[in-house]
Each structure stands twice: as C-alpha cells, then as structure tokens.
Image 1: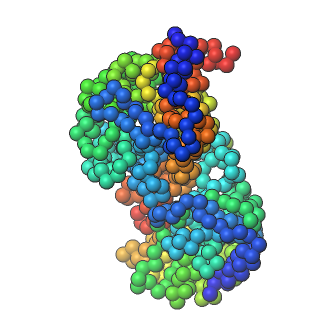
Image 2: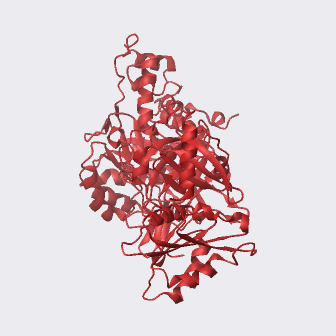
Image 3: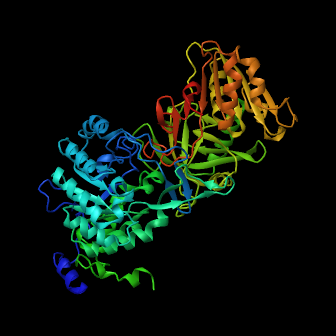
Length: 349
Length: 291
C-alpha cells in the first residue's frame, strides 16, 4: 500500500497554487466512470430515496433542477400498501420509520413517473427493492428501456425469501448475487445501497464491486425500536423501524471511511447530513457524492444551500475542484485494503 | 368581524413598531413555501394552552384556506432535537396584519418548546400545506364540532362562514370550563354550544352528545378532534342522517415528517387506500375514512 502522503501528493499535483476567488470550483462528479452510459452529475448533492418522494412532491418547494440528482422512493415488483400506522416516531436527534415500501409497483411506476421526469434536467435515479434475485433482475430489465432514468440504486436491505428472510445486504455473497443479476439485466449505471446491519460492510462492498456495481451508496437506516411505556408495546405498528438523522452520522462516517478504503468505486455517503460540516466529513472520509435524506424532511432548502456552501468553502480553502478533498482524511483511501481501519480501531479500543 | 382578528391586528401593529420586518428566507416559487416567522404575541387560552401569533408573508396568507396547516420547526437553531417539524393548523389568519395564529397546548417536547416562545423570536415555517375544509356552495347551515385544541381550524372556518353570512352552530367539548374557548373568540353570529365532562359549564358530558339535536338542522358538518371523537360522532350521527346527508368533513391529526407527501409517514386508511394526510388531507370525508 502506498503511503497516504504519496497518494495525496499525486492527487494534489493537479492543482497548482491557490485558485482565484472568481473561479467557480468544479463540483461535477462521475459516479459510473467505467460505464458507457455514464452517471455524470453537475454537483455531488443527491436527494435520498424515501425522503424525496418521486421528485414532484418537492418540485414546488425547491428548484429541483439544481440538485445533483435525486433517488425515487423504493419501487417493488408489485404494488405495496405499506405498513399500518404509526409508521414514524421521533428518536433523540433522529427518527425511526417503518413505511413498508408503499409504492405503485414497477408497472404502475413506469407509467407515471418517467414521463414527468423527462421534463426536468435533474438526473433521476430509481431505487429498487425485492425479495428474490430474479425480481431484482426483472425490475432492472423494465427500467433499462425507460426514458429519463439515469441510474438504478439497488436496495439490498430487504429480506431474501429464498433464505428464510435473511437480509441480502448482510451477506457479501447474497449482495453480490443481486448485483450480478441486475448487471446482467441492464446497462444502466448501478448503485448498490449497503445495509449497515452487515457485520463486515467492507466485505459486502468488495463483493458488489466484483459483481459489477458502478457505485456504492451507504448507509441505509439502522434497525431500531422505541417502546410506548404507557401501552407497554413498541411504538411503531411494525415494531421495528429504520433509524435515521443526525443520531446515526458517526456510524455512517465510519462505514464510508471503511468502504472507501476497501473499494475503488465511487462511494456515495449518507446518514444524518444536516449542514456543510457534516457533508465535508463524508467527502474527507472518501465519499465522491452525498445523499440527503431525513435532513430534507426538516429543512427542504438544505440540499440547495449545501451546493452553495460547498462552492463557498472550496473557494475559501483554495480548492479548484471537489475531487481534491475526496478521501484526504482516509489513510487507506482506495487502497483496496479492507483492513485500512483495523477491527480493533473500529471497536474504539 | 371576529373579535380576536381585531385584537390580533392591533397587537401585531403595536409589536411591528419596534421589531424589524421579516423577509422570507426562500424565494416563494410555488404553492408550498418555507419561510421564517417572527413571534408577534403569545396569549394564554383554554387553560394551559397559548395563542401564538406570528408574522407571515402576504403571499402565504393570500393562498391560505381554513383547515390548512404549517409544518413548524420546534427547536433552537443549531439543535437537532426534537428533530421533526410539528404540524399545526391555522386558528386564525389576519391578512391585514400579515399574521397567523396557532393554538398550542404544551403536551410533548415540540409543543412545549413552541408554547414557550416570546415575542420577537423567530420560527421556521413550511406552508400552507394540505387540503382544506370546503363549504359547499349551497350550504347555509353549518355544524362544527371541536374537541380540545381540535377547535383551531374550526375557528378559522367559522370566521369565514360568518363573513359569508352563513348560520353556524359551533359545539365544543372540554374536561371543564377552563378548557373551553371563550365565546368572545367566535364571531357574533356563531351560536356557541358547550359541553364539559364535569358539568362546570353547559351540557354535562361529551360534545358528541349535544350534537344530535343539530344534525338534521345542518346541511354540512365539520369536525376536528382526537380520533376516538370521530368514532363516537359516527355512531351518534349515523342514525340521524338520510342518504348519508349531511356530509361530515373531519380533520385528522397524524405525526408526520415531511408534510409534502414524500415520506408517507402520515397516511390515513381510507376506502381509496392509504392516503397521505399531509397532501390529500388533513380534511377527509368521514364516510371514506376507516377508523
């Protein structure tokens, strides 16, 4: 492994001296450098799946075409009514959700949304969820033929029915199997969204990289629970829900750091980003782009403000492109060594 | 004119003299909008609740309809706890004073924070959101039923109905007299009927019990209160209706995250499926809601 000094010296050599304040730093990112269909974004700020509807929900509140991209709510093979209420509950500096993937199903989805997206310039990424490998592939094949779809984000945080409901994303081989199936069904850029429930998330990342993913996004929510003391029952009708928001940010930053060291693919970081400093932590840890989820719920203007804040910060710090800061806090960035952050370090001892 | 609208206007203009004008933080581009309000006044009401009056851009007020709500930030800037905004329907809108009034009862962390605000402080707002109560064109006699702080959107609705010279019976229930809305909060032409659990004022018992005598008089019913109230209301009203008339519009209360139909955390189960109460509600036809 090269020393971090050598790597950083190599990357920084593209920049000569401080840029003038009048120049706008280059925020563009390429999230599928090896894919001929490309996934070039004008900036690295992406609205996360589940938190942005299908885009149109926010179209009257923010200038949606300024976003780097957005990811749709999770689409499934068949229509889903979702979970009973209550579906959300607040937690300290965060929230739990158990929406249950309420959506019109892949066929209802393709009829309605791609025609709306075709009128926008912002790249639209479709998040897909399924309970069998073949269903993932079936959805990818349908999406491959649709207009106005920039990429597919594969949510592997779903139960694999063929394996007794064990989550695909907790197992490197099962995650790779899904990735391979989706890869064989589409030439669209594929982002695999990892589950923080995996015992070795870097191993899952390496497996999906080898299976043909173009990029990796993380982290999905962490499984949590809150209990209604008065009723002596879990608060959510589904009992468990995904924890998101600022409360999970340190976990997300650590996992992005580990994964960005283990793979060479672009990494899209997310988990509790509420402002510029949070976003910078993810870039420095090795994320090429970021997603904003829960932050949009509480602050719809956040993603657009972040784009402006990033430009200002890069200017102030003398960087001419975002690329120059990606991974510079990560000693093993893109080294391909999943041990860059040793197990004992990640345990905090 | 409703009496409180006049007092809120007076209050707002008095405060405006010493406070800087408030500009929206985001350019208003669509039907839903994010902006910052300034607290203009906080007055006690209905026991431990407060009437919180805040500034709002004229463009927001001009769009506003009775029953619509705002998703309000209930924490200090720089804090992420409690994280989610809180939905509040509008109690009263004063277009002349560019002011909005909300009825806030300290209950959880968010509502307690909101009830403790002081004039001059700033609060993040998103709205107006959701659909609204709709007074049918030919309706002349309106029956409104409010439970606790659920009276809030009905006060704005009754203000509008009174301006339109419609006949309104406004029924309110509370645990005791101190929890009731003062009659002076409602327009003169609104007939105010109250019920208290302890009989300290009006009918002893539930508001839904006094509703029966007005059902056949009315040609449209509006209700806002806790969900058990709607179940009781349905059982009281159903035997008195003919061909499912009069219709009953209810405003449901749901915890929510986005307020824009994106998260689907606030759905209501209806005969048409799971519907996001923040965009297709909060007002629903009681006949279509599965309680």
